[in-house]
Image (cartoon, rainbow, N blue to C red; front, side, top):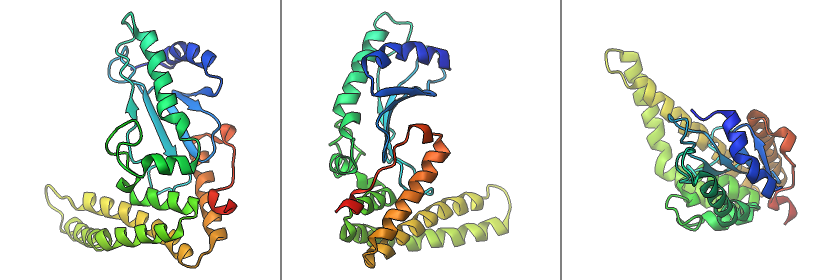
Amino acid sequence: MTTSAEVKRWTRPLLARHPDLLLVGRDLLLRPLNHIYRAIRFMGSSQRTYPNPTATFGVLFVPPSVPMSHTFGLDLMVGHSTESGFAAKLSQMTDDALERGLRRLDTIQALYELTCEDGLLWNVAGTGLSHSPPLQAAVLAALGKLEDLCAAVDAELAENEVGYLELLEEGLIERERGGRNNWGDHKVSVANTYIARHKDMKLLADLAHRNDRASIAAQLHRWEAQRVEKLGLKPYWQPTPFPLELS
């Protein structure tokens, strides 16, 4: 697997050319860090010479039950570090990822506009925000689009709430029955994951129905602070108001 020392060596020229980048662990973090996490991530692969950098972004103010992003990001196909053109490819593809994607995601409104439909960001399918209703709900809440928030939550619950409650019940019965090839634990885990997400969506929707903007903002700030603390990003984070609070 790619080592931290190799990541430091590969990214040194990038950091020299882009003062808004900062190497944090294996991530080239794009600053400022407010509500949206933007980075080039060097997670590596099973082959040490194949670093597989990925341009990635995530919403920091989503509840703990929800992943920060609904997409795996954009792989930068730079090849093996032993190839002669590796440094040039890494430089060019990093520049492209920054200019075509990450730097454009500088506000919640920009993220919303670039992910309101599939393919608007990096021309990649699966980037539409509607692929993750809980994430969509948090973004709509932060923007103050409370009618859209309530509609999105109502649609998700109408389509899936009963199904996950039934899956939970089914899993509990199977787990209690025991025996070989028992899928009960898996079904219970999946159901509980989505039930927790629905609970957080309902929390935002209930506040939105009352037009309680102050409580929505306070909840989003709490979730964001918790996420930043968990990720170890507090030294780089700059807390700022949500559009909801400024409208």
